[in-house]
Amino acid sequence: MTPLTASDSLHALLTQPRCALVVFVPAGLHPPTAERRHLDQITDAGADVFEVGLAHHNAHLDGPVIQAAYRRALGRGQVLDRTLRSVEYAAGLRPTVVMTYWEPVSRHGPEHLARQFADAGAAGVMVVDLPEHQAERWRTAAKDVNLQTPRLVRRHSAATELATVAIGASGWLYAPASTAPTGYRGPLHIPALADFTRRLRAASPLPVVSGVGISTPALAARVAPLVDAVVVGTPIVRALTSHPEQAAALTAAFAQALNPHPATETRA
Image (cartoon, rainbow, N blue to C red; front, side):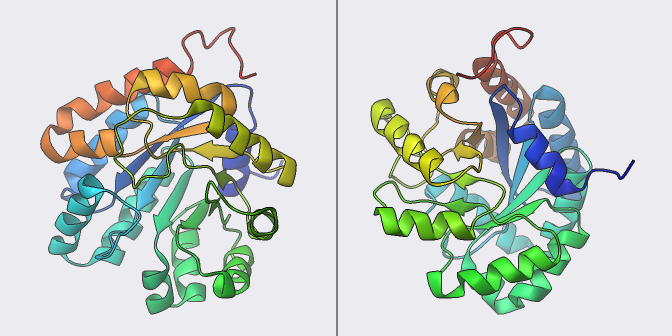
């Protein structure tokens, strides 16, 4: 039997009945030994997928917590090398997708960077601000090395824009739960998100994943019936930055909220 690729494992996980938990971690926030310990603990606490962030100096779609984590990682230097090592370790634990901005992809070269992340074991790379005129080049570079190319879709995308993004995506479509930057801690408009996810499912057969503003386990529980996976970022990053020992317990709380009765409960 042919072994599953990283992309296959990711697809299998996102198409199972229950809502999966994706945990975002910025690479290079801690020294390698501590970072690996944290990844182990988060895995044991219930993370299904890792989203590893490549630190960037202009993370304009992110809020202050993730931006501060990126600055800390940038201050350690060797950002790409550290990220590749983080991805390699995370991918040995759970399917792993890299989150990055276009500038470092362009700077290192799409084909070169795609190959490096694929060799490190990544299942995919999501470029959150991918310019549409570069989308085909990036999709081809990733496809050539069997990397998925998840795409973030703006809440108010016109039908034509949504269709264009969906055609060029693979792995998943990312539906932000809030239109604010990451780290938003206010209420979520669940009916609007439900309508948005319906539009995405009508446009594409890809799994739908949601993050941004899912700041508490209670909110995660409300979003879970709408999507195939929930991404939790800022709450975990906040813990890793100030009280790393709390990250695992927080992960467990989100995992429990998504699947309070894992033996019997399935996603609607």
